[in-house]
Length: 141
Image 1 (cartoon, helix red, strand yellow):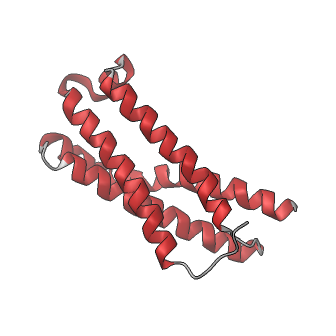
Image 2 (spheres, rainbow, N blue to C red; image 1 turned 120 degrees about the horizontal axis):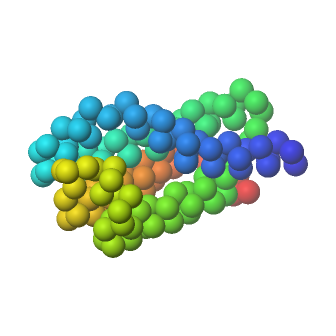
């Protein structure tokens, strides 16, 4: 039972924290995307999809090393939190909250910001789905 709980915690940390850390690798691409505005949503999609996929691979690897049996439910519950967070970010960008403008600085473009947030959303969904398709069968819970 304790291993299962640890599995859920690891899955959540992988999808939220680890995927964010992996996405830092793509920071130079994101800066280029801000300059070439047509590429920005594609860059956010790509970085988000690869980061999510890599984070989930690391999660499965950790599960193998710790003898935790990963399940579909371990992957689904944190995924809902990630998608919910993406929708909150989209909403914040649409409302032009000051924090988004402060982060972007003088280059802030509200339309571009919304498109980038949608890129993150579609990237997270795509990376997660691609990972599930590459897996062998897992128990449901």
